[in-house]
Image (cartoon, rainbow, N blue to C red):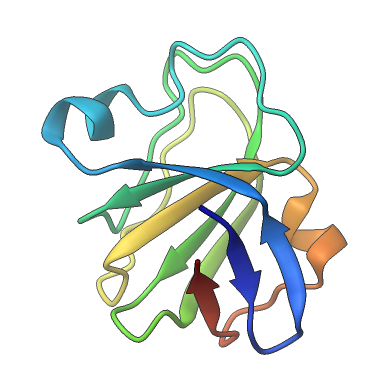
Length: 113
């Protein structure tokens, strides 16, 4: 699955996986040794994340039901917990630097294709 920033007409990720079960959401990126540019993990039914047991920092988009970004986390290091964003319905975890390089901002609309 690809993730596009419709507002800025930029590609955020070209290969996104979906964590849509309790086990997949709990596991997230914990077992990964790396996270390559162009990859992403979409975590459904989620409005906060943690980076416990992770080996690398990540960027995170918190997205509402209209696919609009309500918040973003840049360079979230291992062993951190994000705030809870009550309007967010899912999150997109990305390799560090992706938000900046794609020009993505709060309020932008994304598309999952």
